[in-house]
Length: 566
Image 1 (cartoon, rainbow, N blue to C red):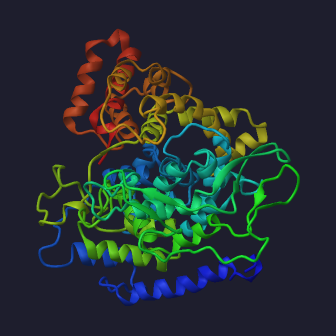
Image 2: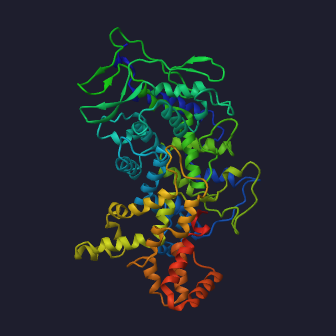
C-alpha cells in the first residue's frame, strides 16, 4: 500500500473524534448539560446537595490575591487591591477574572506553567528557550486550544522554521525513546509509567510494561539527525523496526505495535515492494519513511479519553492546589479520584468547550469553592464531608516564578521600571503614557525583558537544577539563607524612584504608611495590632527611619503569609 492511499490524518482525527466523543457523552454519569454554565454545575455537585461542602466566602482581598496568583503568576498591585476593595458592584469578581484572563500577564503565567509541565526544567539543548517560551506565550495570547497545541508539540519534527519551536519537546530530549515514552504518558495522559519500563509496575497493577512500550513504539524509530542543509538538529525516522521488550522479573518477551494504553493498535500498512526503505528529499536532508509511526501519535494521544481527563485534572490542580486525582500523573484504579462524577463532568465539558483553556479556567474561578475561604483559615469551614478532601482549596507554596514576580511587584520594581520606561519616551508620548489608563501602551515585553534577568536569579535558587524534576517540595538550607540575606531581594527593597520604599519614605502619616505597606506586600489592609506594631517599630529608631522601613518590608516579604497561596 502506498502512503498516498492511506486515509488523510485530519480525516482520521475527525472520524475518530465523532465516535469517541459520542460514546463518551452517551455513557456519562455526570449528565453534563452544555446549556448550563460549568461553574453552576460544579456548584451543584459540591455545595448544593445535602451533606455537601459547607463554605464561607473568602474576603475580597484574599480572593483577589488568589486569583491574581493563579491567573497571572503574581500578586496584585496595592492600587489594584485598594480599587477592588472600594468597588461595591455585585459582579466585580467576574469582572476582575475576565480582566486578568485578557492581560499579557495571563499569557506569561500559562507559558511558565506549561513550560514546566512539558519540559520539566530541562536545560536547553537544540531549541533556544527564548523561541520555545515565545511560542507558548503566543499560543496562550491567541487562546490556542489545548488539542491543537498538543498536536503541534507532538507533530513537529523541527524541519519547518515556522513550527520548529514546538519540536523542543522532542529535540531537547534528543529523541531518547525512554524519556519520550515516559513523558508523553505522564504529561499528556496522566499516567507515570516510569516504573513500568523494565517490568509491570510493582505497586500499580494498571501500569503494564506493554502499555509503556505501546507508547514507545510510536517514537522508537525516531532519531536525532544532523541536517546539513538547515545546519541544525532535526528529527528523522527509520522505515522499519520492531518494538520488543523483556520483563526483568519474568524474562517473558513481548512485541507490540504502537498503542495508547487501552486504545486501538496502529499497525504498519503493507507496503509494495521497494517502498520499505526511507527516501531523502535532498542530499544531507533527513530520510523520509514511506510510513511514519510518529505521525500517528498526535491523533492517537488527543483522541484517547485520558487526554482530556488529564488536562482537566491538571487545570483543577492549578486553581485549587490539589488534583481531583492527586498526584496528577498517577491516575489509576488504586488512586481513584476524590470525586469521580466531578472529574467526569470536567473532562466532558473541557471537550465540549473545544479544549479552551482560558474559558475553562474562567469557569473554575467563578465557582463557589474557588471563591471560598480556606478550611484552615479563621473564616473557613472545617466541615468537610468524607471523600471530598480532594476537592477543597489547598494551601500551597508559591511556585518559584510566582515568588520572584510577586517580590518584584511588592517591592515596586515593576512600577519603578515602568516609570523609567516612560521617562525614556519622547515628551509627547510621555504625556500620553501617564494619562489615565494608557500605561498599556508601554511595551509589555520590554518591561518584562528588563526584569527577567534578576527574576531568574531568584527562580534558580528555588528550583532544582536536575533535568526532569519540578520544584523542590521542601525548603532547603540555601533557600532559608536566601530568605534571610538574599542579595537580589535587598537590591529590590533599596530606595529607587517609584518603588515601594521610595513611596513609603514620603508618607507623613504612619497609619497611611502601614496601610500602603500591607496593601502592596500582603494584598490586604492591616489589622489594628499590625498598625500598632509598625508604629512601635518606627518609634523605636526614629533616626534610622529608612533602614527600619526597609526591614519592615523585608519581614513581610519573607513571611509565611507572603510565601503561600491561600
